[in-house]
Image 1 (cartoon, rainbow, N blue to C red):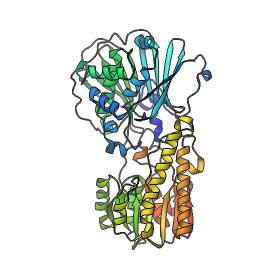
Image 2: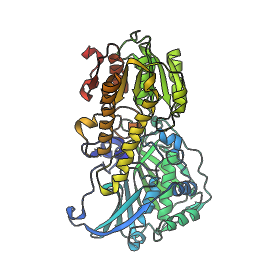
Image 3: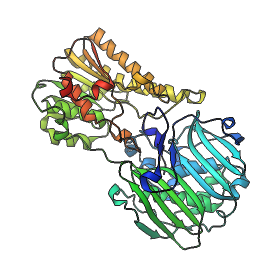
Image 4: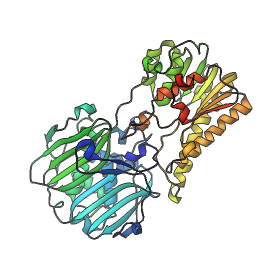
Length: 532
């Protein structure tokens, strides 16, 4: 399986994760969201081809899952993937690598003695990618780009050896998708088994359909097997594959996999697998769990009190992330809170148990234009918190990305306007509104123009509600928060506790000023006691 390591966080500069320091491995993985350098800017490299492109759809993903055995829910379960950092299912990394291989000159694929792949952003079903093929001497590089941002970069070294390895057997059983704790990835952990895939024949048919006819079956099968092992075994369910390296190996029967190194700070994991005639190095990250709000976390920055007794608030997006933290913070100050949730019934039930009758569940899909259920609910509100928004990934302004930018801004506004217009007349006169914006409107990260534009528009809606509807409005511009949306490599390392931002919001409600109050990222990250 795959995922874009860099897509987890708004980056102002490339991030370098040194696996040597992290897990004792020799290869340094560069995770960069930067724009692709033209071939003329890299000494010795010349363009071979830039006309090839591909688009993978949900059918390709489903077929690859069947033939490889990689049924990781990030690829095949829309509900599971929707709660993750990308907000939707993504293409298996190995499948995207096969699509890239289709653009490589046949001789370079047949005669390769080594293949290295780096995954730097997710490949999404239904999205168009161009493949740029460049060469320096006898080394060839192929990069799939969306706009001018690289998603998959493949390097092939000349020689022989990969094609000579024997293919795996047919009829392999995928087994269940494991979800181990990161602590289980002890360096030296080993596993051995049969080297097999559910359907090698089906894999080759899929590859041929994608135009990848020259790649040796052994290479395609090793990519598929690596996808299965990373996505179903180690790291398993919460895997984000960041890279792999395939080299010739010794003859053997079956596979032998060994964890070389693991770093609990970043979730980095390196596994070496010995296959018949091949060695495969898998580099991945495990998304680390983010704790749900509790009474203790809700009162960590501000003691519980009854300052909000009598307040009745709806938190849109209240089941996870900042929305759940705000729900908990308001409840800890004695407010009655409806936690709007699309598919987070379990999370809201846990909040209701933790905070008693102060938290109530309300089925709500902010993206749905039909808000009849919300309009029919008997709500007498004093306040509304708008936390819902689509998952974000880096995008640069480029002719190829115009549809993606427009779609993101449209979905962002819809997820605010749909619930806002449905309950605006249910908010008592002089009530309050919290609009969640972002620090992106303060510093405009290079790869987030769509996000900054959407949040600026949302802020304008808040201003409108203050001027026209007489609401007291708080606009918050939090930095990156420690939530499931940032639960990737370095995504939680320097992220802010959402409970801190929630405490600031709950502290603003009593005695909130008329008009619009803006809390920037610097103010939000100060403890309530420091600003009291």
